[in-house]
Amino acid sequence: MKSNLRSVSIRNICLGIYDGPHATPPKSDTGAIFLGIPNFVNGKLNLSPSNIRYISEKDFPKWTKRVTPKAHDIVFSYEATLNLYAIIPDDFHGCLGRRMALIRPDESVVDYRFLYYYMFSPAWRKEIERHKVNGSTVDRIPLVSFPSFCVNLPNMCTQKAIADILFSIDQKIDGNNKINDNLAA
Image 1 (cartoon, helix red, strand yellow):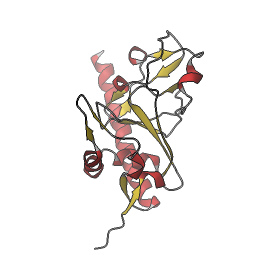
Image 2 (spheres, helix red, strand yellow):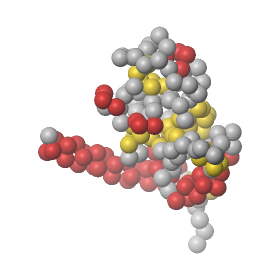
Image 3 (cartoon, helix red, strand yellow):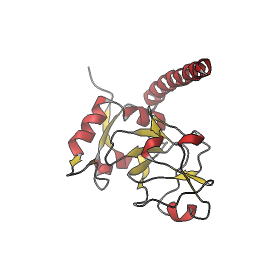
């Protein structure tokens, strides 16, 4: 049986790959969100007030010179704690933290949700392992070679069908978790 998958490099399915600042901004009590590794929880961004670090609106332009995250971007960790991924939500106002990068998918060729779910697949984990640099203190993904990493893509119709099913399951899990949290309160 012939496979309907095609191997495509990340560079051919995204509009850009951007990393965050290589420093930490001054803290603020209010303002834009400064994403950090602790914000990744089970494939999502935990943006609850107790888990957010803010930067001032005055400092925001300085920390978004490279990129301002927007809805449907896929944010990920590339150093120390690897294989953390999340989708930037619609109402997000913030910037990337240290050791974080994002992929801006080209939605004319890839369903952003499919790409996000693909990043949890064994095939993608093997791709990460193949390119991972083992440092003396931390492991990292070399962002300079990241655009050449390969993804196995079905046609767009199949991508959307798979993403719809997985997204629906995720929504049900989120709903059940909220019910459990309310029962525990």
